[in-house]
Amino acid sequence: MTRLTRNIAALAATLLASAWVTAAEAPVNKSGSSVVATFRQMGVDVDTPFTRFSGSINYDPANLAAAKALIEVETASLDFGDPAYNAEVAKKAWFDSSTHPKATFRSEAIKSLGAGKLEATGTLTIKGKAQRVSVPVTVASSASGNTFDGTITISRKAFGIGDAAWDGLLEDQVAVKFRFQSPRL
Image (cartoon, rainbow, N blue to C red; front, side, top):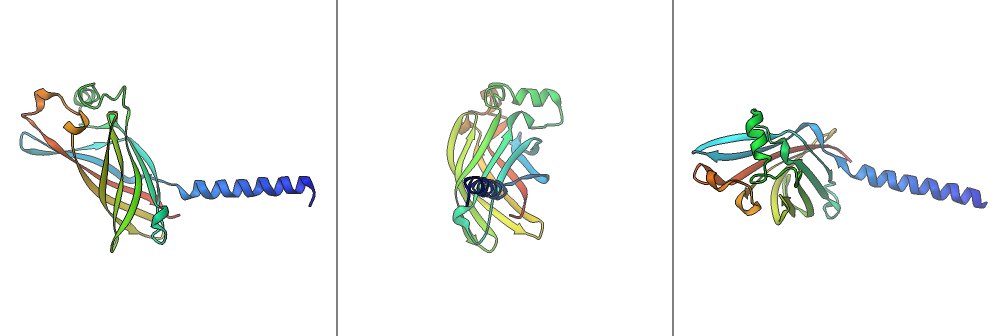
């Protein structure tokens, strides 16, 4: 084998390996995916979607040890349907979106709970504050991909979210419901 042939073979092997690694990171499909915050204001449940998020999910039920997820949600994309409210929650007392534009979840371990149920444990970072969390997730697989559904309840005060003037009107607990669809690997 000549030096040129070896170099071409090495380059081809590198490109194939990097293509495989890239393919293993299945991007979240925006279509069919959602992230919705549900909180109680004056005793009434309010569902408010985040309109911009992204991420990747590596999931093979036969190899959960290699499974991982990274989800990023743009904090300024919480959409109340009113520009004034949207601008308010982007302010420093709330999400401080100019300083902390994204909330992230990065998994550290994913384990099976049996029958299409998983538990994703990792770090949730919002407004520069990180907490280790475990999130129950259901997964449904089809020929075209996987759908991951779950809800995590967080304390907005633990992440420094909210103006104290709202404490009597707005409960501390916020449920974040998500559905992420990704192509099958």
